[in-house]
Figure 1 (tube, rainbow, N blue to C red):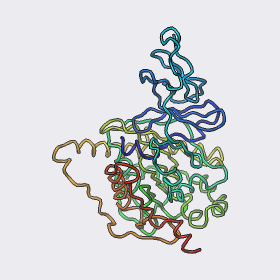
Figure 2: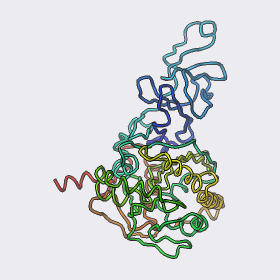
Figure 3: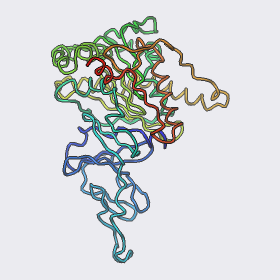
Figure 4: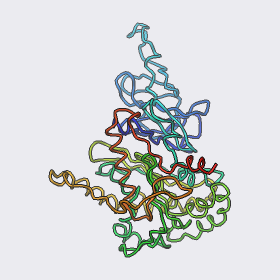
Length: 420
């Protein structure tokens, strides 16, 4: 908790979830309960959801609009800016000596936004959010900035408790295209309507030239097909969304360039922001994993859409996200069973001594002109998993941010300087 969730920038809320003054959203940073609230001046602040008297929760609702947060235990109340606003029997019991300025809600040390995504960080010595995201922004923009209207989360938070270590679901999504045709064979048979780089039911084939495994971006990773449409391969009827892609393709090319506009926007893309945020444009889900003690997580999922999409397309996206990766989703239940079993098996004394074998595509990665990161071919690879565990180990071994290595391989800034 201290070296990963107490140090890294963590996703808190999408700005679309708290549009008005006083709107708040309750979330977690690791296992710390946090309130994120829109201020009068439009800024966003975040605080520990803990009364500074006895540590009780001051907010129990998941979200809402509030003019104050009041503790159920002794009645201390706090203003939206975190200031201690009221204390029952303040003069009688504290004899007017209580210094309210010292007992406001504990603020999250740093709060910053990137194109609608609000992150928080406890470590004052962390890099800025912009620097933390680094070249991963190149791919994030395919989702957040492809169209002029930006993006928003749809529907309510879909919460699921899973008996798994938090690293396993991150690994599963950050680079594991290998399991798709096997673990999800039944789901694919039910809903697949288009090709996805040759990945077939039963893992009978794959096209390694049709995708990228991108890592080496300070712990962030991307898995991307390059066909510009396969993000919607698991829609029983992708026609309305394909029409939307075709109608807006040139707009995206103009904003993001040929590679991202033609090949990445609309393709199956898995984006991982270390440690616990994952976005899948195409399947259009947005997910955070909150650790809940050893061997358990709470998985939060939303559907995500571009604001410029027609309402009918947004409705289809929400419906398909629930069908595939919702609480009863066809794909999510496959993953949940496998991840839970891996965690349970690892409790065994002898099993816990086994190595994790992640050698697929080892030594077969490199640079590609115009793209950031260390890149291996294809969606079927274990290239990204190796970088994920490497980043986890680097943070665990580092006493401070100054000891955390930086490796923004093949950085876009360096490429631009080279061509200047």
